[in-house]
Image 1 (tube, rainbow, N blue to C red):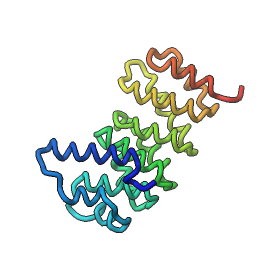
Image 2 (image 1 turned 90 degrees about the horizontal axis):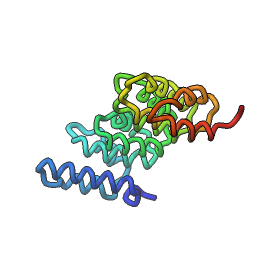
Image 3 (image 1 turned 135 degrees about the vertical axis):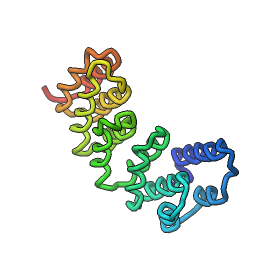
Image 4 (image 1 turned 90 degrees about the vertical axis):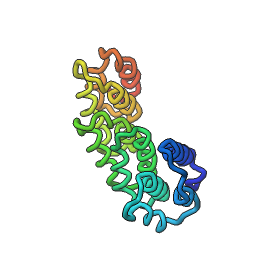
Length: 199
């Protein structure tokens, strides 16, 4: 599937077109060019050229990620930690298809950075998707912190619980059992525990 046929790419293009239009600007010709048929070298130029707007770098990085071009890695990691959750989702999707061995380590670093926990949802979900050696330890560490009384980031905790259930690794048993009394996480933790193998 080329990027133009990818539903996540189409969703991103619609979002960015609306974002530009809501800013009172006309849609630039460069936008339509980036959304059209371009080779990886043209996309890389769009990604790294001076003075490029964020939307141009996002489109270029996303398309390079889908093409498996690892020159997109750094830009996609920056977008994975963006304050705009929709940009994080798009970046996670592209990183999941990039095939760069550095991705899991970067996602784990972002997910476990307590100063950026408000933006950890997409890195957490990406870790579960990657099924990398870093995935379970990082998700366990993040979930442990989310169990503190009054922690406001329960959605991040829920994503950890769901991810650990998907990974079905017995190393998660202790933290999932600790999550059982949590009013928002307990049901998902019970379901995740049911998916674990071993004693």
